Length: 265
Image (cartoon, rainbow, N blue to C red; front, side):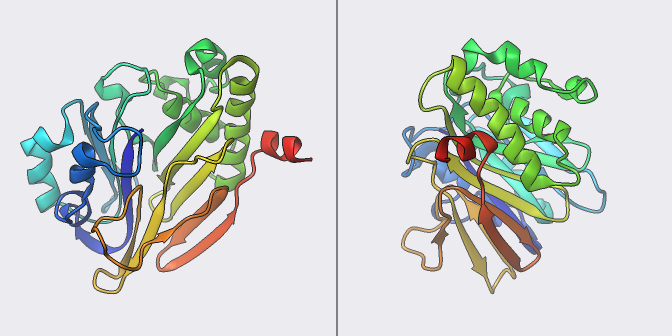
């Protein structure tokens, strides 16, 4: 499984999350402790917001620890809202187009997890992407498909509802034609103003997700794993949660895709 980190708050240098902490995202790319794969070397990416509504995007297929350009970029770029991801493929090719985050307009999106048996219903998932968004389908991952389906479900105006509907549609395919575990998902996405995060699974093993407010940075990090070993203040997010981070404010709501609601009834 992949590892990722996101930040919202006062502008900081990207390396304060990505490379400088003792258990930074770069460290997690080769020494992850809370996922099945300790090595995440199938590419990396960052999306950051600045003066313009659309995010900057930098992705490559190298292991994150071996790219000197990434080190230089994160040491010089400051942002008050950014997403960063190191990839461990669940089956699709190692290519730049399959690296997270993905971006369409002002939206950026990244995902850790899987939709079980995706190869057996990939064509059906592709057909759920509206024509208006299909030109943005550059790669082959289930993650990018989920993002584009969610845009078609109204992500611009209803982020929580759009993600519930999109996840439900993908989950229905996994249940009908895929394999267990049908869904394991943590994702983060942003419209350039707010940061959203989801932790959800159809079993009891949703990937880990933590958050921490820093008075020093005047901002909040949302991460797959705490950035410092033994550092206090990291709070785990519950499974089945939809989180909205808006400046210093945080709201946690239940995340229940329609399929999950029907199964619970």
